[in-house]
Length: 557
Image (cartoon, rainbow, N blue to C red; front, side, top):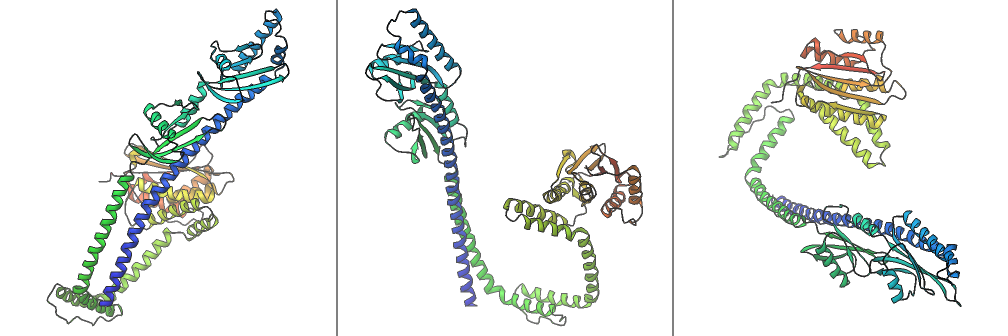
């Protein structure tokens, strides 16, 4: 006994350690995966916005390059001998017209300017002269993106004759709407907590949260770097940023730490401590039970084992001064009674087993189970399909094993839905269920809808090529409720429908062509609800067969 107690204690401690380790691992892994998934979503969003922004910037660069090679713009350099020549002024007007047309054709540019340093000629679609002053003050040394007083622009220069100093500078101002659009994409709702903004090369920020912008700029000035863990506005989180190689624009997002992490920690700790307490307390109870009860229980077990072997003469003669003495006396009385009833009980058990076996065989069709299992085997490489089929199959057979005289319409429809889903996965057809919510909590006979659906699949869907529709509807008509199952199969002629109705109304299922399921459903409905509840047949709008019945359900109390 001591060895068993020691072994039991060791196993209990080991089990406790495993439970605590599992809870801890599950907690930390859940937080890690959740955090990683959110960061991945934010990074993906940043990459998408950066790619989109750089694509628009490339459009601006291409537009500037095309203006440099425009022959009319190049020729203007040669005609600058007389600034008051009418032809020269007309060419200037034509170039302005070209620039305005370019602006009309695109949304990414707010203004286009061309500057000839040699002559000081400056043409712009913008009436303000800030870009000209920028060029006059700071001579353009290289092509690329730069900041001006009014925002971000792209400048490109080309020298056609180095000896004469013929040079042209094209400057295109990026539309502010492009930056605002990029910022709005960054602030698209990810989890309702993420804050984002744009940081231009000169440190200017674009966003809708001034406090957040100021805090982030401070951290960026400290060279915190991308993907850093930090605290902003008393919120711990992760700063994720990406910089555009073209223009130096930084796209920044701040992902706050999940506010529920502390709650998760507290809950996990409480669960661990509670589990440990329960297991330790349970161990002492089991140990006490083992010391004070096991001896008597072992005696009872040994006597029951003798009874199991057919020894109905055995009795417990031991007398103890506790509650087990009453159990021993009752055991002796029980075995005496069993000895007298064993013969009749064996007969009853035999009859019951036979009846249950017949009922079970009538409910569970082996080919349905086999086909479902073969389907699972066929989609073994698709875990989602396997999981879906297995779940519906389990719910299907769990419902079959229930022994209720009445069920709710909602439960019966749920069972029918599982059956339809299983069949639809295997046979590839569509189904719909439209039920008036008012009848969901009414009672109905169990296993009354599924046989009709099975009949619709077997004699409707499978009997006609291209048939792929099953519809289940339920509605309340006065004091009665009506359920209809429709298919788009080959249907029945008027003569065939009349013959089927006659077969269903017979006292027994003699016609082999008659669906046993329909016949059984029809008899059960009539026996409980009367002749008004019997099955009715009609041809539906799809050309298939619609089978309906009525019942009077009671509200579940």
